[in-house]
Length: 138
Image (cartoon, rainbow, N blue to C red; front, side, top):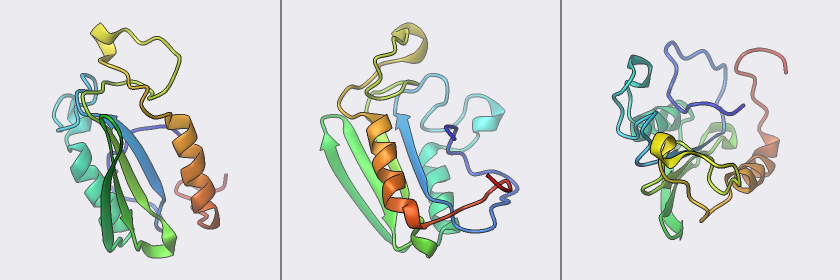
């Protein structure tokens, strides 16, 4: 599923969940720092921290992978369920690497420095040994 990274209340996952999230630091719709509509009350880093704690992650690594792209990766997690945040510095509410045209006046800037679809594919190939069921059978 593609959706927001906000940590749900109440948390109803029965086991650790691998997470990869992409977020622009200048997202005008879902602010990186939180605020905005009431359902986006948490900041993105706070939500990632909540998932990391839920998954019992013990190691944190950060690296820049392209100009304006920083990956924060939580590892050493229960069941190998890593938590990854790909921050697009200056990016808006868009799909990194997409050819789809987003109106920058509405959605903010789009990055072509990374391809979100490719990184998602690689992440879930890596996580392939971790089966999760958050909301019942697939």
